[in-house]
Length: 153
Image 1 (cartoon, rainbow, N blue to C red):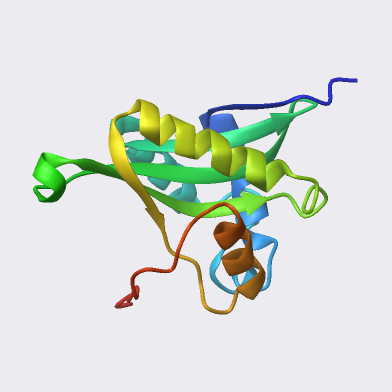
Image 2: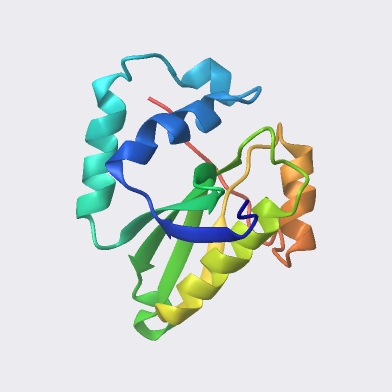
């Protein structure tokens, strides 16, 4: 049995497993709709992400199963002399694999990917209702240097 974790760009056939992971937590189960057939809004969103060269939906694979996901968005800026930054969002590890180091491997891979793409900074947001996630990101070297805000419609 293969126990190595590998990372790749998500494919359309991964979307159902990704949505299942997004829905399988305290906050996600209030905003996601994991059902079969999968609502078309998820496939439409996947296609938009997949067609945008500044976005990568990345999955972690172990034993041929999707066990983790995150989205990397590359953002050009005028600040930092026209520097690029990477935004990491929607990080999830399958509930069966949490606490096994998969999240750290996935984040390390994403940080390296952003560096290879020429980004000068990697940023992310985490919900204040996720104190474990905040501790996790701080352990990886992220600092809470800014106050993030959102405006929901």
